[in-house]
Image (cartoon, rainbow, N blue to C red; front, side, top):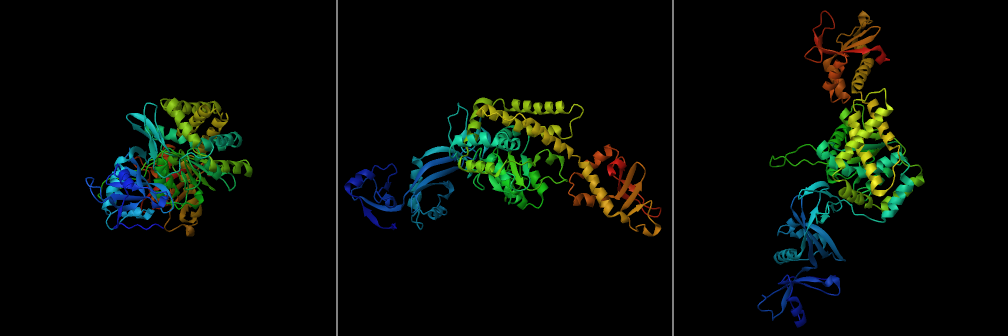
Length: 574
């Protein structure tokens, strides 16, 4: 181990003196040695006017500023330094704000030796070294932005139109650097993926996020979730790894794939780091979120709630727009979910891989070969499609609606049909671009599969039915607390929760408003007022003109109380 004496004065021989006095960082110089561990940063003791005594002091172990990196979003500078860490020369990016007397000691943690008690000379040397370094652009955030009124895309590198001659280094911490053999990834896709519509859909989601991010600027689409839900060993994780390998390393916690075992704030923070890149959240079964619906709202909205900083000023809200793939052994959407969630969270309950061998081939390929396809896809978009993205999106949306109308001649569109197609159209668009970019044809049944997603959603989107089901279930369990026409005198409840009136065609349920509101809250029905208004329009809710309830008296002697009155058809009850 080399020992550093920062107080001792040393002498140079004549040849060394002639060599080092020409140092561009005079009075500092890098004293080189055949043994890398002996390389040092030194400083002449005397001024340039009298170098005849050739004395110098050691300032530090080897360290040099290689690049100066300026983030074009924040304009803050970072430094890329190379240094000897005790075993080898390594490179690291540091914040420039460490170059102060109070913070410079943090560099010692990386194995850099310098006089921490008096770091003045070391700080001055770093400043001189920085002045010689070339300045480059850098970025931490991902997604679309404009530079000089030109649209660019930030990923593992900066994608720019040919008219812009810019290079930017990505410093965000996600592994988005291509690795392995590009052809091996595409050969695997042709042999193991194409032909399986569910697996192809998930793969296309890996390409669709940049399109979603671009379109979100105008259409406020937020984020879109594909929940791969089925029992174990059905290929869910394999499919998620395939999608995230489009742009980066598919290993968990290396790039855009993490476990669902995180707080809501942590997930939002992670999603904002991955803007316009497809995210995978593995194993939702162990999610720590106590309220899945609230978590889904935040992720689908693509933005976090507003917060104040310590100075009571509004912080910049994190935002993102990406396809998010979750894997789980259950459906994420609870029955209480609003239609806003149902139009953005799509449950895929398929088997994604055909066999254990199929899964192994996909996993083994994507873990060693990744990142090439996404880069080529963005280059294709920048060159061929940047001015056509919106037009092509609307054409894909129209294609889905036209196909729907052809297959449903006597059936009108559901409440959510157009909203669902506005999201699924992006996957269809990604498929068309994938075919054109790579010359790999996607199965013609892709559009039929997307239509089946819409069909499933609309069949389960009648939220008023869920509200009525909750009321009927409560009444069935607590029937002895309701006044009925067939109550015996002795069995009539003294403090009834409501009344049940049956006729040949309908059942009239009168329930205390306060109790019904409790039922709605327990079942996490968040949009009660909207649903009650819909029931009013359907003549199922009997209420006063200016309110959604009526004042009702259960007996001659009792006072009138606020009640909801539901008139439910016998056909519904059956």
